[in-house]
Image 1: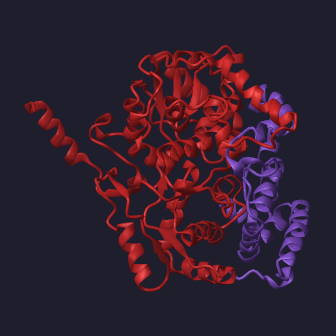
Image 2: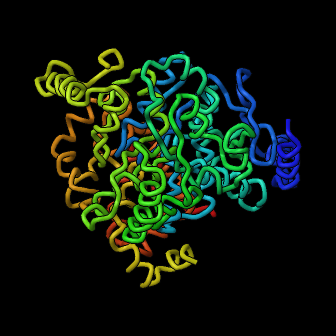
Image 3: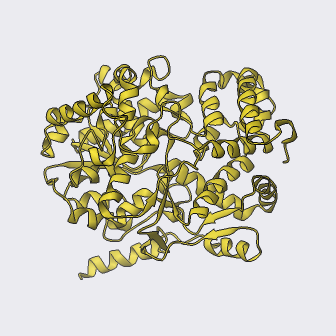
Length: 391
Length: 133
């Protein structure tokens, strides 16, 4: 190692953010010892990763309870379908539960028509539902992931909230449960990226991507996010970039990497013009001018939606846009040979994905005809719906 | 501050949330904040011209997804009825429903009716579930 790289490494260590004085796990275990709540332990089979401050985070490799996302399931269903398909291919045991509600966090931050006790009750009701099954919650949505970390902080710090929460949960006949780790699906995908790469059947070496990291992932309670010294110098979160690199794609950097996609928490609902302008002018145009990528990869519901569904308006005003947008899970699934419409369900996206698919070696017209064949089976009454075997 | 404004039913909060009532109704009645049937020209018209095509094919496209829990139109995924009952109890016990009454009475009346009926079916007396916080 050269003297310069040694000095740079030492400087990075000196400037590495210090972990919060109170470690949430210690606090949770203290509350558990007092009988105030139950901590659901990470299953035995897990990987260890470093967080921003160098603490170790455990990421389960198996036995997941999928905490789905409203926006993904409702409007971009190829996103969660790709996550489940990847787990099917990798032999990961999971439950896709019906006993799950939304985190309701987006509504709370957008409209304020809720309160902290209700938000905590919704969170621990979902966690109790996962605990009852013995499977570990995997949070699909970045908003839910950030929101639940804030709920965890509130439960730890506020005895009065815990007391009120207990009264509500007693009426529901459920315990207060908090998982040992709050795990985002992109963290599982990050630790599984080399397994995905081993099964890669499509060449992505000609694909240039840019990464948009979700604010709700790496800015809210930031010490939980994964960092890796070998990815982006350990100075930015490693998820998504680590996956794209492992799959052989070229990762382009751009000047507004740290900026929000424009979704905000409430802006997309109550100030959509602001969202749309920020998304296209501050993010998409910067990427286009500085990198000109084939694809933007994101890892959150709101980010994929905002970056994808804002571009048509900016295009109408003559802005330099038109970049396909996908979730990291869809990208990984395509790498492993998933069908672009039956599994990745790209017809729900707004920007034309076909040029990018062609660069991946996929014939989009042929793939769409295959999708239409299956849709015709549904239209004709031959089948009620698709199954994994049909895809 | 926004939460206080909603809780006290301020006119400014009512104005700000006027166009938002369908999302409030959706999340409080189903447990999912958005749903496939919102993808229609008169709901999310500014999500792009493709919304028309999506809404025309919605029923078939939703069934053309292999994930079993996503064969839904009014909910983002298939939420169990017992789960919705538990969510309704949370809304009632934590005073959420009272907040809606203060800010949007027409949504409140619809929600109250839905919740009362489902809680009743599951053996809960709606009026006995008083706010406890």
